[in-house]
Length: 117
Image (cartoon, rainbow, N blue to C red; front, side, top):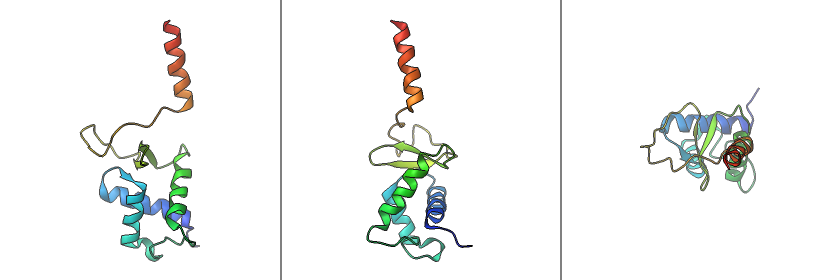
């Protein structure tokens, strides 16, 4: 059974991040995938249409919302990701700031602040 473009995108993204050992912008990951023709599917990972890079980004965005994702956001603009398993220190200039807390965390933080006053 052949892999879908979605599966190929996730696997190729994981390979790029493992090889580069740093957080990367989605556009740079896409460029690396195109340059290396992962899995022999050509530079578009099996995506058809006029904007395969946007299809690739959409796959990654959807995967990032899954709590079981291999990836996590390190910077929001431009979207920069790393593998959850990668340990990057504050000295790593690729990390600018952590993403905003999730809604549940925001509510908890807000309630703690309100309780103090």
